[in-house]
Length: 219
Image (cartoon, rainbow, N blue to C red; front, top):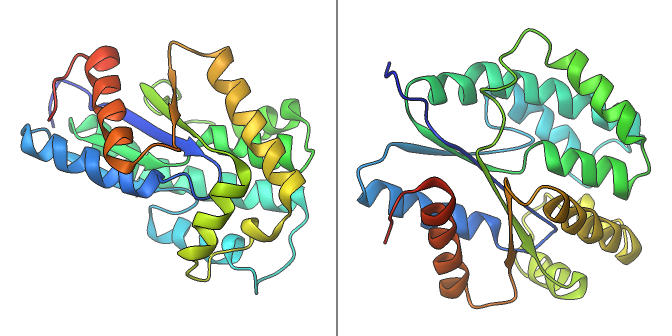
């Protein structure tokens, strides 16, 4: 274990915004710079959380109501933090996470209409006893893309996990607006990225964000 905590970087955005591609690109750049890093995702990332993911994102699965869905997500997040994220950060490893708490606020709050106060209260309850500061992202990339373009991209690479993609254009517009609002409200943590660019241009923006916000030069 090292005395220096790893950096926690989250990747947020609607469907088809290219988060997975950019996580892989940043992981490669960090490896090239000799910085240890792991890529993970939510819901999921640990054995218990991955089991819950299968219940949440498969369109053929149960039709959860928003509150039940939130409770499953928070249960998965607690296991993910305990089993993977916090130990990695404590060991000095950077953690690159595809979705985190912002997605919960946006998908279950803006998208599905749950009170954000309720989400915050249940999150505090579910994650009680964990080091809240250690699990707070150092940097969040918010990938922004027109809804129709994102859904078309998502449909082209559909691999079974399409429950959210089927919720309709109005839902996904609320999601996009919610992410943009979070980025505007917390500019010190969040960096809004134009995901309509070519992947290479998006990667350059991500690497520049790491340089400007975290002081690490990557190529």
